[in-house]
Amino acid sequence: MTDRPRLTTSAGAPVADNQNAKTVGPRGPVLLEDYQLIEKLAHQNRERIPERVVHAKGWGAYGTLRVTEDITKYSRAAVFKPGAETKMLARFSTVAGEQGAADAERDVRGFALKFYTEEGNWDLVGNNTPVFFVADPYKFPDFIHTQKRHPRTNLRSATAMWDFWSLCPESLHQVTILMSDRGLPQTPMHMNGYGSHTFSLWNDAGERFWVKFHFKTRQGHKHFTNDEAVQVIGKSRETYQEALFGTIANGHFPKWDMYIQVMPEMEAIEFEKKTGWSAFDLTKVWPHGDYPLIKVGEMELNRNAENYFAEIEQSAFNPSNVVPGIGFSPDKMLQGRLFSYPDAHRYRIGTHYDALEVNKPKCPVHHYHRDGEMPMGLRTNPDAYYEPNSFGGPVEDPSVKEPPHRYEGEVGRYDFRSEADHYSQPRALFQMFDEGQKSRLFSNIATAMTGVPQEIVDRQLEHFDKVDQAYGDGVREALRHAKTENAGVDTSHAAE
Image 1 (tube, rainbow, N blue to C red):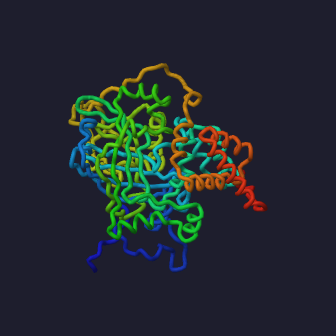
Image 2: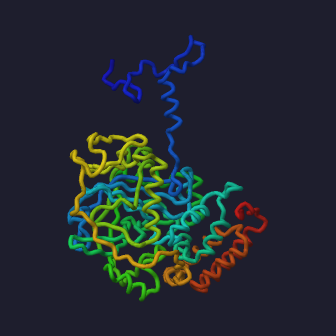
């Protein structure tokens, strides 16, 4: 005997022989009664859960949020108490690629954060860009279809991508960011993070404020060009995992400064009159001159996961996970994600996904959710399985009641696109670029348009012209140059 633990089945029964299946004699067939063999084979068949439909390829680590400033006049959330330190988990990801995709591909990066606060988990599920391609959740499944594989060719389709974007000019802001230098960060540490959506904060006095969350990297911004990325991918498809894991393992802990932009609740109406767009439009940013960044604290990542599958792959981030002092807004895309994210986790991981160790709150949990598949650690009073009850079950706490939202209006399906300004913010961004940045933007777009039918290209060019004539002309020249270089090269697969 040794001091090593004894091997058991998942039910705890000791295993005498883990080397040989039970058979009829040394040459005979395997018996169905060999439940230990069946358990091993059945578990192996289930060692992979369905990958995420979006953000499938990801990299994560644990860390700490330290609050260095006082924003309690905006929010009563315990996580924002001056001096508070909250343990957290971060997961970075690409949007379009599958789990086996290369890390160094041009794509929007997910920037998901889970804060284990004393009042429950707060999840901030954002991206490395402050805006997104669409502003209405009705269009989100359609957009994601264009980023995935064509049903017939099983290849990524540049035609589908540009066809959708050219028919949805609200995407121009995000497309410009994606095709710029910042569309291909070198590592997770060298990019910013944003909550992107408009959320809300509320304080002890019951006052509500609209808010946007920002995380500014202290490591500086580093990006690959398309040509550099090709060379990197040729050497390794796992460069983000290598960089994040290796950096933390070597004792170098990346940091981000956390900021918020704050808008008084009733100012949203005046904001729309002044700017021509809604404060809750995910395709727009709030001007920093009107709503300056307010420092909150710093986020540090300082511990790698011990088991990637259990702690990163099974991690589940929900924008619906908020705590007293943090709330939602009329942001259409946010409203859609409040349902779609937890619903995706229930499908992908299971009914009780939030009871897994990585997702479990660090504070006490009491609820009346019962049964379903794998109710892990669900220990409740057997007589108190409904509410209200007379048997000592958990009860509501009116002290954490959120102030009411001031929503009004007629219910209907409203077309905001025909009235919205889709061009001024991309114009401001484009005009900030220097000549080198513009040149790379034009080249990246031309490369991404390889094989796309001319009518779709022309429709997209009209949008670029409306942003800035130099934008459209620059892409045209890059397309002419790319056409000359690619003469004789078969790119027909890209047009599917």
